[in-house]
Image 1: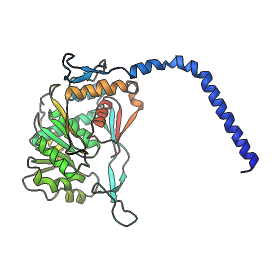
Image 2: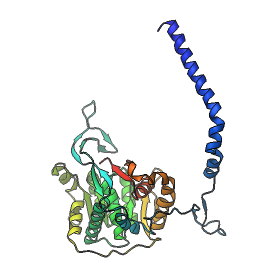
Image 3: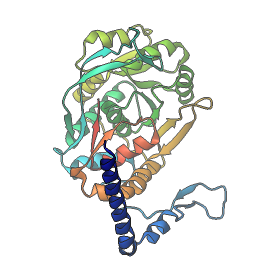
Image 4: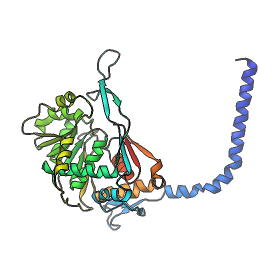
Length: 357
């Protein structure tokens, strides 16, 4: 670049910077009084919680925000889920997912399979997005709930979901809620000791596991004596040998069923009148990642989950909810984490959720 051209470029940049700065300071008073940032700061700095019992300093802290009024919100997660299809319409699409058409192991420059947390990385070829409506989801989750009941699950039981974030995770959580049982979550990349600790502490009898994690559970099965039934989320549209190799080798006393078989069983059953949980009943027991020792369990009741999704997430997303048909949320964070689970339940009240697989 010639010396004269460099000077010209420098002059142009200087003029642009001068214009931007002049515009900023000239328009600052107008936007300052129009946007009223002091009001936003006041709202951001306000105290949003209070003691449940003001006279007891050891009392639990509860939300001190005004309750949002939204037609689908009911006292429990179960009642809210049962209300959505009628409110939004049976044919309204709400969940999207992609099926795995083929998979192959990812190989590094050294010719060896790439692995993370002991699991090999795979390259997937995915289908176009497939859609589920509120009506279809209601039918699927009710069938899964009945199928779980046929496999011995009952109101108040604790059912573990051990899987990566996927549409089946979310559907199974809804089915467990309809059954009136409690969801137990463990991170899918948790170490062996953490998984054994969480299962034994909650005395899990029935667990829902993705096929990719079945070999891990098989290797730990002698250390988790309370487990009686394992429902595995099979690989759709992949060669059946992959699923078979992952689910074989379990002791004869462990009942194995695919999620499709559980759903099919529920579909063939007559209607069941499930017991509705109370707001103070446990909805989910979530375990931490266990970075400082054994994973720690946190309990959330139906009331806390509804308050969290309604009064927190919906309050923050009220402008988005009002334009729900023009927004789509991409689910990618672990559903075993309270943030993702709360957000997805909040958005399920009216905003499309899309799963990558």
